[in-house]
Length: 60
Image (cartoon, rainbow, N blue to C red):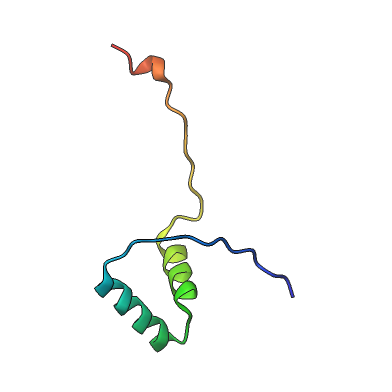
């Protein structure tokens, strides 16, 4: 079984939103971590491409 590496993060959330997320995780039979990962996977595009802007084109 392959172990998936995780990284700890600190978030500041509205207490009511956190309470609702914890309750939903229980209803879904998931950990809060699994629920947040699931939501982010569904929300984010499969690939994010960030391109550098050529600063010379921005100067007047």
